[in-house]
Image 1: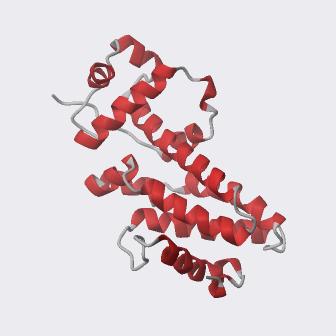
Image 2: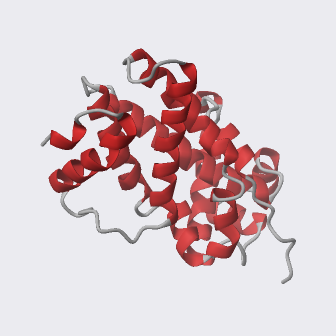
Length: 215
């Protein structure tokens, strides 16, 4: 059955990631869980809103009321993943007492969240459809990361002013995005302690700190 081609954009994903989900009803998560399952099994094509409704054991009207199109469903799934990643990073860095530790642990959490995620699955399965979101269309994501990290860099005294903080934050964001785009790496991703040391050495020049000597 021919279906309209999905039109996916990063802006609504980023916008959805910063929305407080506490006001959403439980049906939203059920629908997004069903959609995520279909994305894993069928990719971006080969399924319909009706398929989501059947998998979620809900009526079509119930799904359409919350997500009028397949585009909205995919945006919702990816926004939820991004929101959960941001929350996981926030919870982890809150336990760290230094900015260096926060940056390193945030990097490790982000890599961990990426493993097995829907976005990682789609990148591997349909790179031609997903890569443009994270390359030529990555502006909104870079902006979100920059706005999130720059104040911390400035407050910690690791930047001489607003401009320096934004440049450093954007550099870190682009470094993180490179891990999303290219998973093949010489970093010891299977050894958390070695990975921490490697990430510290990698980030030292970016932060302009003595991270490279940390163990």
